[in-house]
Image (cartoon, rainbow, N blue to C red; front, side, top):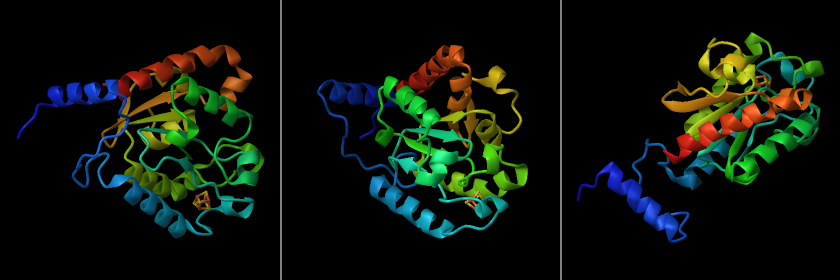
Length: 222
Ligand code: SF4
């Protein structure tokens, strides 16, 4: 039986209204959402194993822990930051310092939990003195982020700050000009916004990030 995409959307809304948040459907392999959460979990585990004790760039020299990323392997929403900071390096988890608390509040305000989204960085090891990662370091580490995106297959990516935005989209312009707009990375909508560290220094810009988050929510609903 053939069913229109519009009817399908109405059907999903109907089930949602009944309180279902998951439905058992057969999604062909290769489509976003296809492959199943277990396969994605396995995919991420095997990618982490492949990265191992990576020494592909100089950032390995000063790190305490490699920060792979965390969250739901089948997340519809993925956040991509810049690089681990001090706390992230010590704990081996992304966005756990003060900037992380701010990101967590944003995620929760958007109606998600940290565990329900996926959070990763452009480079997986902390740059010395929290400097920006250099081009060759980004180039060395990007294949890992690309594979994470391929495995998770999110519906929307929110890039946090100029480093992540440029890494995924190329030179599209300054973050203050491109924030809140929708770009595409391999067909996936990408909405750039400010890095939470910037918002800690410029709290008046928080409302701009909230408006960018609403653009993300509209994309997730459409
Ligand atoms: S930043 Fe990436 S490429 Fe460089 S050592 Fe860490 S994991 Fe490897």
